[in-house]
Image 1 (tube, one colour):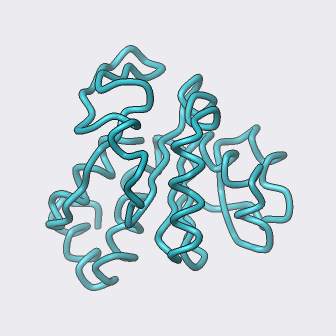
Image 2 (tube, one colour):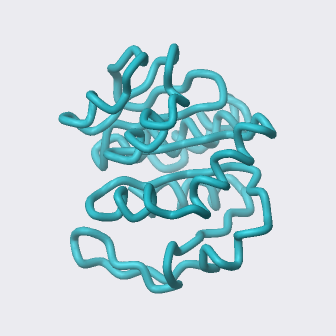
Amino acid sequence: EALLPLDLMRRAGLEVTTVGVGGKDITGSHGITVKADITDSDLADNAPECVILPGGMPGTKNLDASPVVHKALDDALENNSLICAICAAPMILGKRGILRGKKATCFPGFEEYLEGATVGGRAVRDGQVITGIGMGAALEFGIEIVAAIKGREEAEKLAAAVLAK
């Protein structure tokens, strides 16, 4: 959920900085450890141009407990920046009311947190918010992020290049 969209964004020529909440070495729910570019303490005073929250448990709960993540979301809202979340992570957006009145999706079983949203789909964009249903839609989610930043035509070229279409 995190690495496939990251790969697509970098293939599209986007400069992406990964942030580890609590440290640079982050181990996902399936035992895969990745090294983030910076830690959340490095991000604390910098407003990101885009926020992308990967899902999984307990990672989503760790993100939700982070004041730095919530500040990044506040900054993104204030600056009308792109906010993206996949799998369980849309629950963070839903709990904050960011999805109210929007189309969104999430991993099955987390819909209760998306109060006020119209829920459905695999990778859904509504304004500045993109949500993805889970790992199986990570490619579509990543393509949608690229489309939001570089345009639909560039995203379609990228999808063709990685044999997604």
